[in-house]
Length: 277
Ligand code: NDP
Image 1 (spheres, rainbow, N blue to C red):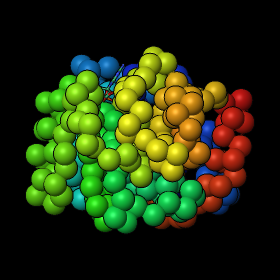
Image 2 (cartoon, protein in one colour):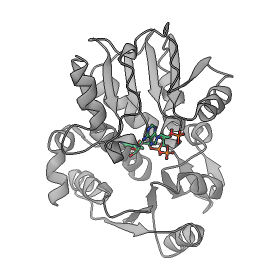
Image 3 (cartoon, rainbow, N blue to C red):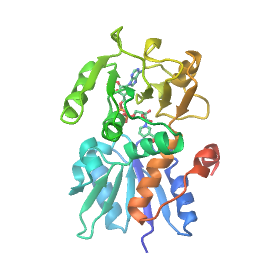
Image 4 (cartoon, rainbow, N blue to C red):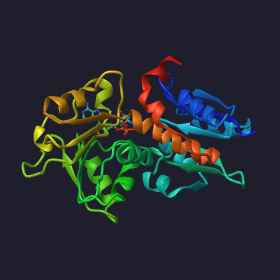
């Protein structure tokens, strides 16, 4: 019976993955175990090897181990290769470790399927140039936008990503403290920085948004994040946090392990209830 799962990270106590995967399992009357595992930089590789040696079927990886997990894999999906980071691990038929990245796919499913957004010919501004941005760029490019701008506090990191993806799309890299005055407002503004975790704003230049800009913070919280408070104060009508992305990336991981589709709508609509479980 394929039933042993886990999520590895540090910190890990806050992870809602066990509750989400248990709900998905119950949709198919599956009995699974799904645990949170606190790992550390020195022990991560052996923790993963032990997990699979002890009968683990699959695991999720969260910060800060998505890159080390990528390095461990013998086989990678195209999404994982592009992201150079994995959030989903499993073994193939030859007992080799395989890595997948469902973050970008999860974001896209939330934006396009759940929230009804079309990104064709749009101007997308991504705030931040860390691991999350690396994971979402290719799925965003695949939607056929007209323009993608990465704005980051550290310009060099935005430039590195623009160079890496330059073979498929011309991305502009901009420093957060010198946004050009002629940069048009975004159709979609994604906050992929971790500034919300410290209740900080990654930018304060309201010229990058208009009333019609669709604003999305990859972070999520019970109350609107500082970023979403700001976009609302600026008059934006469409303001969403990353709870839908979290549930959708988990659904894609579940499908890659169990080869079963799950319904996400009830979980997203009752997201606050997950914390009580
Ligand atoms: P990283 O640590 O890899 O990158 C952090 C980024 O945030 C960097 O670009 C950094 O800028 C920027 N940043 C941090 N603090 C500030 C600040 N005070 N002001 C401006 N910029 C700042 O993190 P990740 O990319 O892995 O994650 C980013 C966010 O995305 C997190 O909040 C995470 O929770 C969320 N996330 C949500 C998911 C979901 O399913 N909803 C999935 C994955 C991530 P600099 O380069 O200058 O240091």
